[in-house]
Amino acid sequence: MAFYIARVMREYGQGYWDVLSLPIKTFWSLNRQVNRLRAEADIRSLRITSAAASGEAATKLHDELQREIETPVLIEKKFDEAKFLELQQKFAKGA
Image 1: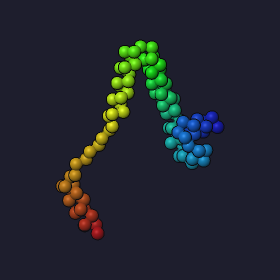
Image 2: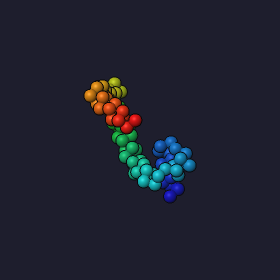
Image 3: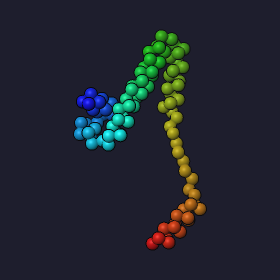
Image 4: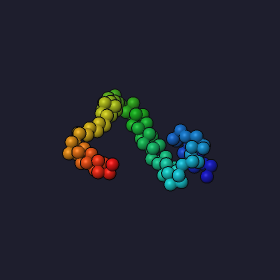
């Protein structure tokens, strides 16, 4: 069990007591994701190492990574006046 606790601590940067205070389902769920997270990082490292052997591949990878950096996820919700009025009426009745 100590191995799994240490593994979660290292991967997520949490202290011993923080890990022990996690709900058991959360702990095991986080533990199951460790290999996936490491594989993702390893694939990226492999791509970088492989691209270093070819100038064209390096340029292509650089462009892909640059697009990742420049493409933030934006979520924009428009104000829904009808929904606002509906909620206002709902809470006015309850008051």
